[in-house]
Structures are given as C-alpha cells and as structure tokens.
Length: 346
Image 1 (cartoon, rainbow, N blue to C red):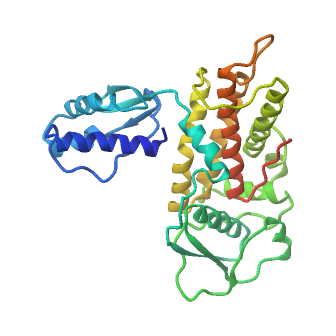
Image 2: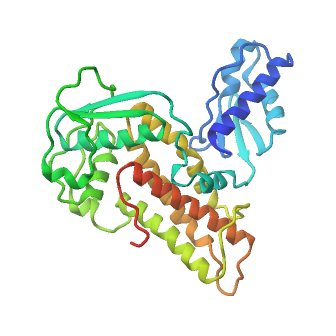
Image 3: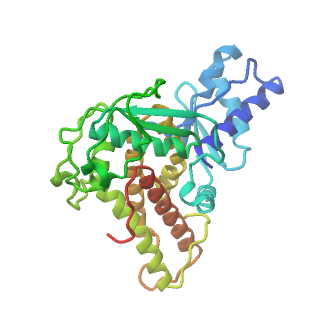
C-alpha cells in the first residue's frame, strides 16, 4: 500500500463516518499521510483527527478513536495506535503490492499513466548548473505527464555536449516560463568530472546550496559519496539476481519476513510522491536525495536476501529477491530522470 493509497483509505473512512452521522462536518479534499517523525510509531502517521476535531465539535482524541475503529477494518492495515493529542499511527500488513506495482510498471513506476495536458516552458540562463537543473526538471515533468519546452538565452558551450542537454530554442521566449527557484550557480563551468558525476554534483544539493565539483568528493568510491552508494546499490541488485540464479532461485513477490526490509519497502512506496513533489516544486534535488535513501535501505537489506550457508532457497528468499529487484528498478528509473547512467557492474 503506497502513501497515496493509504491517504485515500483514511479519506474513505472519514467519508463513511460523516455519511453515517458518526462525525459532523465536511469531508476534506485531502488527508496528509506521512512517515512518522523521530520517536513516532508505526509505518505512517496522520493528523486527520486533529484536522477534523474542530468542525466536528469533539475532542481530537475522541475523533481519533472513531477513525481508528474504522481503519483497523480496512484491508492492508494491521494496526492503528493513537499517540499524543490524537495522532493516528498506522502499521501496514507486510504485503508486496508496491513490489508488484514496480514489476508491472518497470522504469515508469511513479510516472503519470496519461498526459495531463499541462504545458511548461523552462527558460534558463547560460550557466552550467541552471542548464543541468532545467534538463532534469524537464525529464521529471514529462514523467508526470506534462509537455515541456526548454529555452536558453544563448547557445551553450560545445564542452557541455557530453551532458546530453535538451534545448528546444535559444533566445528570449515570447511568454514567461515556469517559475522555479534558480539554483545557486556552480563555481566551475566545466564537465571535467564526466557527465554522470557532474550532473549529480549539480543536482544533489538543494537549490540554495552551492555545489562542489571536486574529484575527491564525487569520483572516489567510498561510502561518503552518495552517487557511488546509489550506483553501487543498483549494481548490487543485479549481482543478487545473478547469484540467486546460480542457486536456482527466482524472484516472486510475497511477504518479507525480515525487519530490515521495512525501510526499503517504505522508501519504494514513497517514490511516486517524491517524483510528484520534485515536479511541483521544480526541485530535482528531492529525487536525488531520495535515491540515496533507497540505496541505503537496499544496502542494509542485501544481506538478508539470499540463503546463508547450507540453507536452501525458499519462498522468503524469493520474496526478498523481488523486493531487492524492485529497488534496482527504482534506482535505475530515478537515475535516468536525472540523466545519469545506472551500470549493472561497478
């Protein structure tokens, strides 16, 4: 169950309570469901009861108990706990609906199913980071179903060609472009790190942070290098598939009886929301940082995937392998939207 699915589930329970006269007030258009904050419980949390308490004329804790009674009867929800003044903490059943969705969608997981009809024009100045930022944003907006046109005030240097920038026209556009936060310029206007490391160095920091294009930070294969972790995690998913094939084990979605798999499942479920936010806020850095979250969760989980010692492959191993392969798909798809390659060997 993805956060969007869970939000719709909470909204359905609220609507039912209003229709049955158990709760007074209008049904909100949207219910926010998010990961618990530090110290929180469960897989997800929502402040829906606090949001509804005032219109209902009832204490938040009382509204929370009412919603909790309805939520525990919903498929996919294993438990609901009320904390604080009325926060609902939701624990999901250990299912593989997200993995199945990723396997069905492939690299298009998190993309819009159909064109939205939205048309955007991205205009940027002749500056390296602005060019890469707009190119990544173009890819993300297109993934969300929009049509996008990119323009630059003047022609970019030939030296930037390896970055694979897509520019539809040069000069001043006749109409205003999509408003987005112009990122802090790069200190160097070179691609000496290579296209992948250069793009990552310019896209991973937030727009207000000054990027660093240094070899010791982006080319060295060490744990402190997030690009290395992301690409290494992707390569590890392919290694797990190869090693599993040697054991006669193939991936098959199912329950994952490993506590270390929960953070990875949650990160994969969050991916569509992160893509939508990156498009809405003109912030490809959000996608880059979430890929690091997925990678770190996969690297923690990898040791639980295959049999150890004389252990024979079973249903649990096939389910874990399916989860790991889903992570590889998300990492490859996310890197592609950033214009960065995802090698199978590293």
